[in-house]
Image 1 (cartoon, one colour):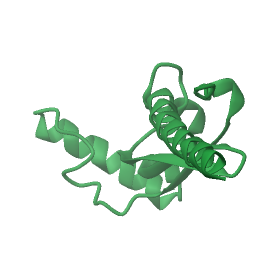
Image 2 (tube, helix red, strand yellow):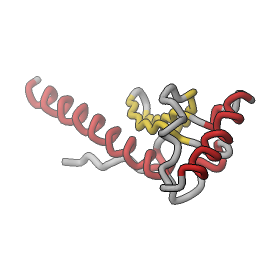
Image 3 (cartoon, one colour):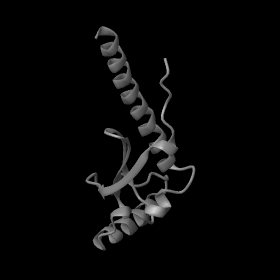
Image 4 (tube, helix red, strand yellow):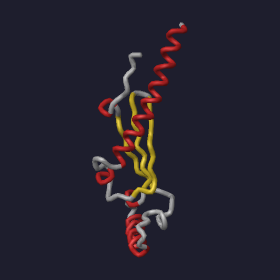
Length: 121
């Protein structure tokens, strides 16, 4: 088989942060220190009042190659901003890897189907 997996260098990457609908209270932090957890939640809620989507976001990373797409999703995210979320070694890198793995499965399946069809013709 002459198919080879796609790499990060060959794909387009799109990041989207949407408002998270899971309540902040009881979901933002579980440090074991209830007072600290409430303070963090209050900070997130204040940022949400200022319409800061990164305060409490549902994040989707979509990778594409030609017409092929794959995505990974992570909810209940609280970051300073997009740059903070995209720091090397964090969830952003993991989400790209997950979406790229799925994209490679999709492209490989399409490749196999085309090869099978080619042999049947």
